[in-house]
Length: 306
Image 1 (cartoon, rainbow, N blue to C red):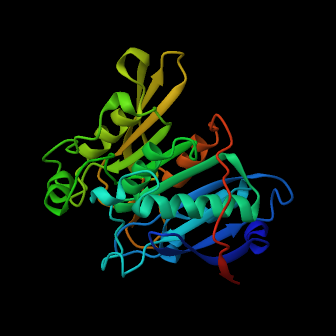
Image 2: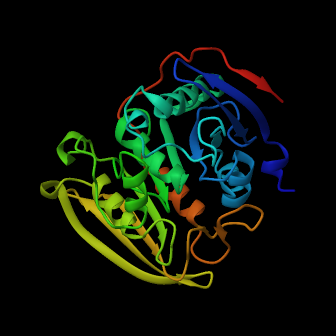
Image 3: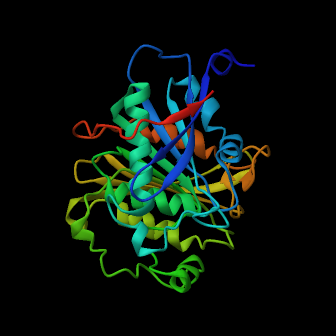
């Protein structure tokens, strides 16, 4: 076993607020112990668990090499029988409401308990978790420095179950009238999607990239790179701001379906072939910090089990 994993600590904990409660697991590597470290918050997809998502993405192993803390938040079957995050319901698309309030509360709790660096906090998810990551980025730009969306959808892509199904098929764009580009601060975002995804149409990835990027008058030039990694071709488009700084990366993986690119077969919904999505996300995330510390008192005190 690699040294940085052997000396990592794993803690299972729970968080509750007025909306509800969720469990989560935190992985703290030995590397960087004693100083403020970056935090990656991971949101799994439907039919997955925290352990399954950790195994499939290999984010724990990769983050440990860089001294990053990783928190895997788990959806409860009581909140959704398929363990999907309820990204498509209006009650779960607002700041300090619904599931976003729980995820934000867990994030603040981990920052406080484990002395994570509040300026280097990131959120990433797969499928329904990717859609929820987009929501977290748009509703908490003061808490998260950057967002990773894999096989997900943009913010406000749906408002109920029927519109969610339509959005997943790529039949419609943003539906929710609350979404106005001018109301949201652009947030650095990296998007991955397989172009043969039959669960969430790849058209959603392009919408998510445009939505997260700078407004038209603040955009710089885009660059497109085509390549091949680990047996799959990909197209990587980088959207820059007016200063020329990369703001959004959009990776379209050719030949891949609804699966985490470059993932491990130890987890579900993974494709062992293709560019390493976890590695690319970490590299992208660590370029960015939030403008000011978002740390708030973490309450209530969590329960934990080793």
